[in-house]
Amino acid sequence: MEERRVTVEVNGDTKTAEVEPRLLLAHFLREALGLTGTHIGCDTTNCGACTVLFDGKPIKSCTMFAVQADGHEVTTVEGLSMASELHPVQEGFKEEHGLQCGFCTSGMMMTATALLEENPNPTEEDVRWALSGNLCRCTGYQNIVKSVLWAAEKMRSEGVVRR
Amino acid sequence: MYPSRFRYEAPRSLDEALDFLRVYGDEAKVLAGGQSLIPLIKLRFASIELVVDINNIPGLDYHRQESDGSLSFGALCRHVDLEHSELLRRSQPTMAAAAPLIADPIVRNRGTLVGSLCHADPQGDWASVMMALGGEIIAAGPGGRRTIPVSDFIMGPFQNALRPGEIAVEARVPAPKGAVSGNYLKLERRVGDFATVGVAVALETSGSTVSRAGIALTGVGPSNIQATAAEQALVGSALNANSIQQAGRLAAEAAQPKTDHRGSAEYKRHVVETFVTRALGSRGAVAA
Ligand SMILES: Cc1cc2nc3c(=O)[nH]c(=O)nc-3n(C[C@H](O)[C@H](O)[C@H](O)COP(=O)(O)OP(=O)(O)OC[C@H]3O[C@@H](n4cnc5c(N)ncnc54)[C@H](O)[C@@H]3O)c2cc1C
Ligand code: FES
Ligand code: FES
Image (cartoon, rainbow over all chains, first blue to last red; front, top):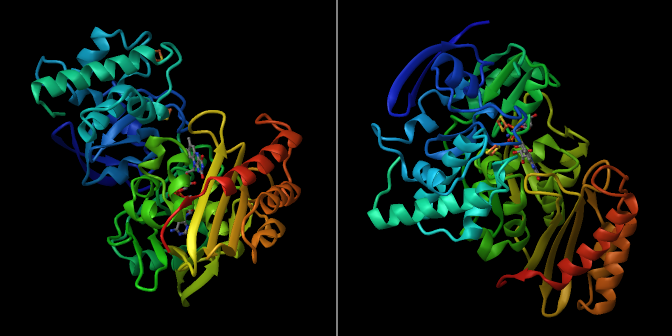
């Protein structure tokens, strides 16, 4: 079957590749680009482990074909930190013990990052609502919510909005 | 999971999309939000020759009020647009209540209202909402455009009334004749789960008299169910404790629930009655 040329801006870099239409974005990121921070948990559109930002909005990358990303911007967890400096959301997960096994964490952080860009001052309820499509089998969510609130506070105090 | 192979086209205009559908007929599938279609392709439940991705067609992402007061929703209007819609908050309480209850926030960023109606999942929430509102689908195809009431459009589980070669380009809610009120209540086991029971209620009143009533049920039958007898029990008089109770009972009778992992048939029927009475008692109302 014919391959298609796609050009995708991934974490700020322009990537061009020939892909089969059936290739999922999650596989494209992990296998073609080696960005294995994006996890595949359920592969059935339920868990959100594969969440990336597509033109700034969280989407499940196991439920989009790579060809659909042609001409769009994708941000993965690898794109959160700047040089060697962690993104406040990453720092928050470290400070507040927002992860145990870490499998859900990259998806959680992508959704949280998008939330904080839209709403820099979320309530606990806002955070829980925004993260309700990301499942975690370990933490019971309590520390994840604390991590995001920690990041929100830090970003407000530093006046940073960045991705 | 690796889907089987297919051809992919992402036309930039509706005409171009219709041309692909004409050539491929039954072998082609429209891709909108992909939140139902892609999981099916991955499970290889759907085997498809050609995927026609409509996401690159400009001008389909609108939702707006037309000059006659009707509401229209383009094929790329996504659940998230409706969740944040000021227009719905102002003018259409049943839809405003339903939007945040569809799937989960990440799925809502992609999935579309029109795609949901096309998918005709018997557990789908929007079909009940649209049935309660007397909504319509506008289909475009080789023979031009036609309008199909949602109650006829949903033909059965995962079956819609589109003919080969047609695309659903818009969903519509007719202009109300009276003051609008309504609600959508949904019982789900967790966020992102389909409804154990969903109830859509949409009323129009002139003075205190109910001039139009729409009640439709999700998750309690082989398709969404319009509770016609319950609707009729409300029209022509003012809402009161008696008529509300009667509507709840008639809606529960119209339900055809099955016992499954989400609950027993008896329990679901009970929830229908409770939700209909509760929704009638707690309708968001908007100015006429
Ligand atoms: C985890 C999860 C939870 C969910 N929970 C719910 C829920 O609680 N309630 C609910 O109602 N839904 C739920 N859904 C389904 C979701 O709402 C989908 O977005 C919706 O069913 C399909 O819309 P779509 O735009 O994604 O359509 P797609 O997946 O792109 O298409 C679905 C079908 O409709 C056809 N189609 C789509 N658009 C058109 C068009 N314009 N013209 C002709 N044919 C078209 C496609 O060919 C395909 O057959 C859930 C989905 C997931 C993954
Ligand atoms: S892997 Fe994509 S939602 Fe679970
Ligand atoms: S930390 Fe293990 S799944 Fe969330």
